[in-house]
Length: 177
Image (tube, rainbow, N blue to C red):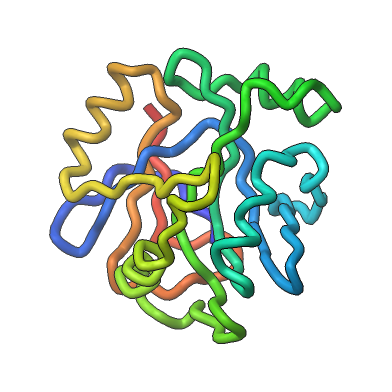
């Protein structure tokens, strides 16, 4: 699903995440293998060997997330670009997960955002090195102020009752800093 640029929606129907300055990927684990694919269908698995441990956590899953390389606690786009061009695997990348699209062969696309998020949180993904859940927040204006203060890319607002749609969707709103 792609976020539509816009103004920050507010209210109890929305949750908020940091928009990570990184590379959005779908991470698929099947048959003991991890595959990391960008939204334009480029396989970047070989660039991120540190994420191979994800295969030991869930044997069949498709996850939506953003690959980031953190330097001094902030995303480093230059280091990410170097890694994609074959640079060394240091610093290690972190896969910031925000959604689960399939689990044990069951598609979750039609389920509401809140249900998919709850499923994602139950997966115990912390057992895999370099994998984290992108935190969610209920106060969009406060998160936006914090992202501006820290120089982060912005905020993603997600409608709690929304299914996962292919392509741009008005139920995911991207609010740049």
